[in-house]
Length: 161
Image (cartoon, rainbow, N blue to C red; front, side, top):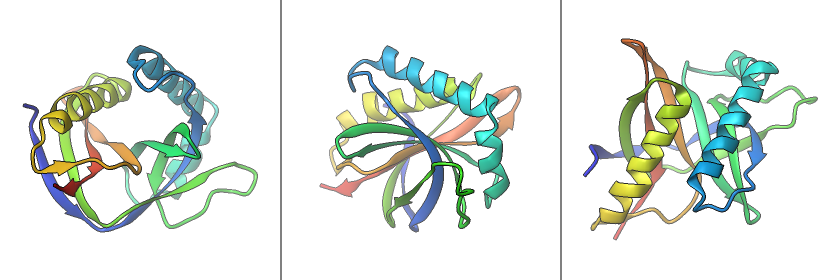
């Protein structure tokens, strides 16, 4: 099984720019391509830089959330500020509670995101006996770079069974 921990986290807020994912939730190749295209767009058009300027730390959040029966994906940062009015954004609330934390690294942020999601949703959660994911936003947190690799964690709110 993948290396993971359960950690108690205080509630926190992520401000993000998002996109609605059109692929079926089981179409991992389609979802990964949509997410990759989205990240390329927000990196190139300056939206990610706008968010970074508002951030309270250096972490970049890739958030997945179901909103009104739509699968949404956001690029975000932890902040107490709000986005400029001309930019459509969403404030995503993460609840205080226990989180499944899976750590990893990848050659790119996109590879890190895909790898951590695969470990968390493909190995840890299906094999977990004493906790479960019951919905709500989950996120991959890009924390930095070392030895030429991007490192970070996936945080998924869970409840004890």
